[in-house]
Amino acid sequence: MLTESQPSQTQLHVPADSPLLSPNFTFGVATASFQIEGAASERLENIWDRFCQVPGAIKDDSNGLVACDHYHLWEQDIELIASLGVDAYRFSISWPRVMQQNGQLNEQGIRFYLNILERLIAKNIKPYVTLYHWDLPQYLEDQGGWLNRDTAYQFKHYVDLVSQAFGDRVYSYSTLNEPFCSAYLGYEIGIHAPGLKSPQYGKKAAHHLLLAHGLAMQVLSKNSPNSMNGIVLNFSPCHSLTNNPQDIKAAQLADQHFNQWYIKPLIEGQYPALIDQIPFEHKPDILDGDMQIIAAAMDYVGVNYYTREIYQTDMQNGFEKVQQKNLPLTDMGWEIYPQGLTELLLDLHNTYKLPPIYITENGAAMPDKFIDNKIDDQERLSYYQTHLMAVDSAIRQGVNIKGYFAWSLMDNFEWAEGYVKRFGIVYVDYQSMQRTIKASGYAYRDFVSNRPHLINREVV
Image 1: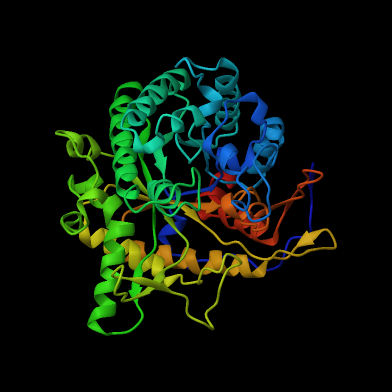
Image 2 (image 1 turned 60 degrees about the horizontal axis):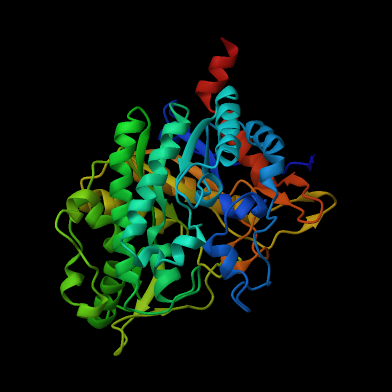
């Protein structure tokens, strides 16, 4: 059910000496289980299933029960990925699909992912597996979810069984995707599942998520020592609205809350100084040894980047996000600010002693128009062009970046936005489930397929 649309003449391009053209640089595409799989009856209920039932929680009142039906269409989807010529595919495992409530594996769910892993390997596509992309089993949420310390140990058990089942088939594991979103959006402001809203919850949930990461790294080092094992974090550079010292301080405070709170404990084994400033009831419950577990050595850090944020001072909260007018925006209302990616990567490089970095998500939702059986999404293509150049610039300035993954392979369930926002380089008709490669998809295909080392290899 893949239809061919006429590719655009516009291409992605970098200078001939770009480090992105190195044979060792990895290009891939990415997805997440709940956003594409569907087949909800074949797994346990998760927190997003329950959240989607809350009136008004999802903007179009949709859910992930069917999504892109990838569970049934996975074979054609892997053919689609292979047709794009990418080196790697980043996808996530649905915890409630592979585990039973009694703590044992669901063999049917495991077989689904084993089939995918084996097919990817046969196609010479490296599997990058994310172990948690937000779809916590509902029965664990009923016991407190990420506010319950035991959930971190339940995660360790799940990772132990799954990594044993997968054996040596996985090229790279990431423990968590964007713990900030799980903790802050899910437990502090409640716009993501499970929809809890309390300033006292965010940092507590974040600590248990980071603890889960550290515990999982212990398991992966034992069960999968030959894979690259790390974590994926999202970042948005925090800029001040003005040069007023109070606005600058506000932006720095926001950076501590939303960026440094997650990266600093992973690399340095401690939370930012902010921890001494927040109210006692907001502080996480840190037990002896926790920070050592969290700061486990990693093979890489995944960086997800979409935009920057602008802040001004606020008397009550210390900072307030500002939405400026007349800026180029994606369909999500996010500013298109590619130089922020270079800035972010340099800041991380100059602040921390980091392992290699992979850009694990980067992309844009755009108001795609399906005309004459094609999607000529020049705005998205331009977004990729400028952000690839931002990565190129960071590498030239000394940042050790090893790969780049486009978000997303296909249009999908965009969480609280439902199906209205489309991030894919492949268009999905949610009625017929037909996939159609967009102009950006063709450009990405041509770019990754025409790298000099691939052309030379074909000639030889």
